[in-house]
Image (tube, rainbow, N blue to C red):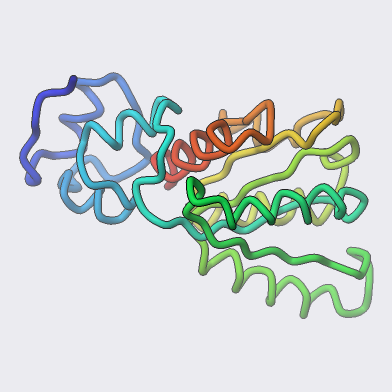
Length: 193
């Protein structure tokens, strides 16, 4: 159990006391941080930060980043939105064109807008995901925007994890089990910035 903190406690105090980096200005107030990240209390935030929060703090909007080869499993993943334990809306690009197409600038602007409207980007990791230019671009764009980023390994996939997920120590669910997915999404929401 965590001691109650006042809403005007500084982020720097929280980071020092709990040994974490919340990726926010040190002079930001706890109340503002909790509101911005979508949490009701410090204890809920810390549980999420440590990837142990198994229920959503609030409804999350997630952008799905994936390789088109994995589309059938992605469709199955989208069905999870109907699960009452998963309080989430999905956005994704579902790109039909290659990166080098003459319309890539337009496609990027549309995807950038979708990423902007979400709070978390979920990378669905299949066998070839790590080498896809669009996936890499989507993850880097989300990172530059300060979005939460996490990964979920698709069933039976053995592929490499995209490099950015390692670089930022993003939480990765080894399964598509609802509880595991909720934990990594909430963790990403807590660590965003």
